[in-house]
Length: 157
Image 1 (cartoon, rainbow, N blue to C red):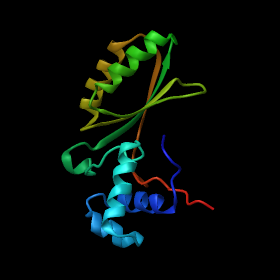
Image 2: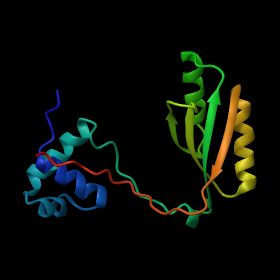
Image 3: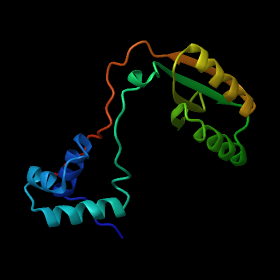
Image 4: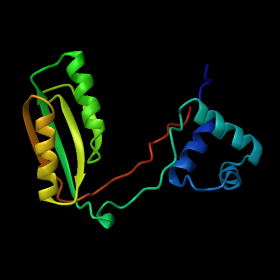
């Protein structure tokens, strides 16, 4: 059973979201805690699934992935089996960065990154061949104005 997050746990999350490569000592110093208790808290946050991983953030344009596309999918089939199969198929496609099942006039929204329009067309053809889809609409991002990975960690009152 996990216990509620306290102010120190939340500070650890804020610091780690800014820079997860900091040493335990550096994180502890920033939140006003000694290293051992800080390390134990970090371990608990990982074991409880609050911290789900540590990654390096990469500039997509600098590695040749200059096109960001938001793909809106409407399905003609809403059965559980179809949803599971569709989700598994999309999850295996490396171009798909995020998948959201939606409420409203579309069933899914995908965030897709590719090198260019030709590679997106290849992806699109693969997507529409994976399942019977009612409608697929793509919107191409012209400029990234804001992109963050750090969640706004609420502090307790």
